[in-house]
Length: 479
Image 1 (cartoon, rainbow, N blue to C red):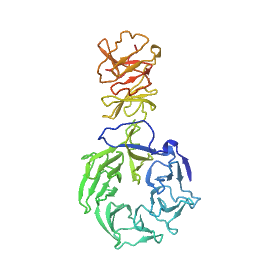
Image 2: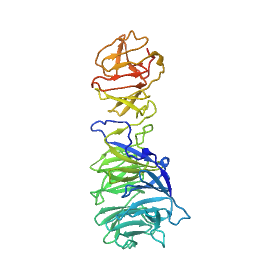
Image 3: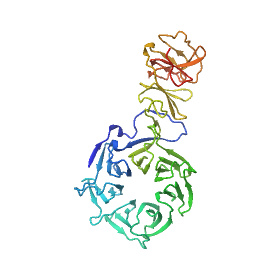
Image 4: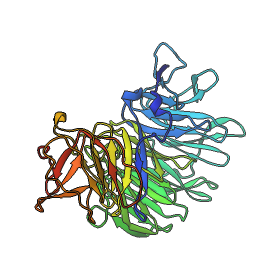
């Protein structure tokens, strides 16, 4: 077992950075926190995520099992010289039953993890049981293997093979997903693109329907509606009787990608993990109104990765996403939107992460004074920033100055005799009139303060001072 200390910034799920207000009626704001190889993960393709009863994260990858206790990452790998290590490095799933047993399915068999002794115990000493999926039942946990179902009974604490009456499939068939359809029936999707119904009491199985393409993901909601995704086919929703209710694709909805790798329910909404289109979210009552979370180049506050392989909702209203080659990340809906520093003139964030002053003007624009990155203007209606950086370093021409949003006062050392003070109603930050032809505005790279003296007045004390033509986005020579 290998341990990796996670940097302190990973510990709180909500990163304490500069956040601003959201528009009423806008889409929810989400915070993302990524864990990948850079933070100590054993491998970046995540197949399974579990939050156990202690709150630990168990992350199954293509090369090793990881546990994250919010402080450090522990890595478990196969060791051919240690019979108590993982039997294989590719993790298919991690499951926890009602007795808090931790089950780990690998490419070389199913094992139980002994938390006290920190060893892995094969569930069957005589033969290797390859498990592809599981479902928690009231009296135990059910596993799907090649051609068979196995059940671990809580009462007897034994794992036994289930005899299926009139077994309608061969030993080469396994079930990639098992879901509770109703009180006595499971719905299962098989590797030969078929959907089956299994009666828990009678132990009988029948085919529900056959699919035309490979099944990628499936899900059953609380009303018994069955969601099914075929390869490159979007998502289909069926009634409990098997009637297709609707079919969503990129052509007829806001779906961002037709390859859906996983489906989950979170806060009453369906979440879809896509292969290249990020995450799509919709309300089952209004399926065509789809919102999406996607990675956007240059936007550090966007989704970390667009290929979502697995989704896991925990009992604390968090949802976790495992990606293809991007590690995993947590998603949490927050009442605030977090913005970070981005490259200069990128409209997705701040020019400098250290903020020392804020002001909201009468038009709803947020003006942000930074320590070294100049002034930033945030438009909440477009969710975009505009940077006003200092392109000049000619400090010898200036001393400190004072600017008011309505009353403009300038104190300059040179060439300022023609500047007249004027009081007037304005629509943008600190302009003044010069020769009644050009409006300019005062600006400096380090904004000392932007206080709320009165809502209609904005006072800035910059150092050094520059003047900008309002009709341009670059800075003119200083006066």
